[in-house]
Amino acid sequence: MERYDKAALNALAPPEPRQNEGSITSTLRTLLFFTALMITLPIGLYFSSKAYVFEGTFGMSNRDSYFYAAIVAVVAVHVVLALFVYVAWNEGSRQWREGKQD
Image 1 (cartoon, helix red, strand yellow):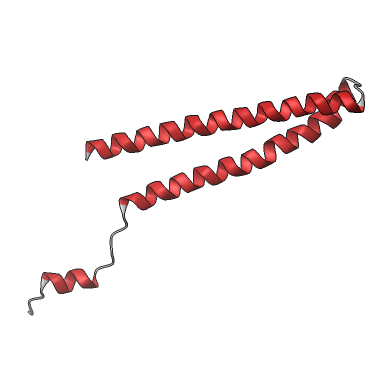
Image 2 (cartoon, helix red, strand yellow):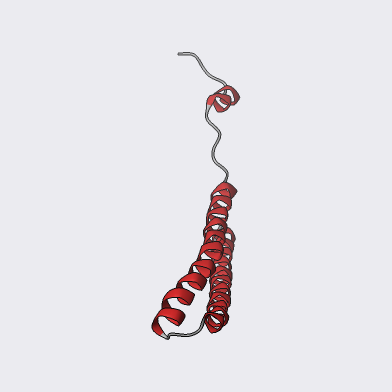
């Protein structure tokens, strides 16, 4: 049997994935999710609450429904931002705890 040098065997082995790549992927996935949520949720709530809730159900005028629908959209933006901060804070503390145990 031939003896192989460890350096030669290590050169042929595929590189091990870095530990940071998983955390970067997770962070980007979270950021993209909340970016999409930040764009779609306030706009969707604005138009749906204006048409169906304030004008349809409550029978408000066009001018009043604009005002209240804008309030709903602003509240939605704040809720999405608060959720993002909460998720980012917990994700960061989890990664810190995992790194601390190594």
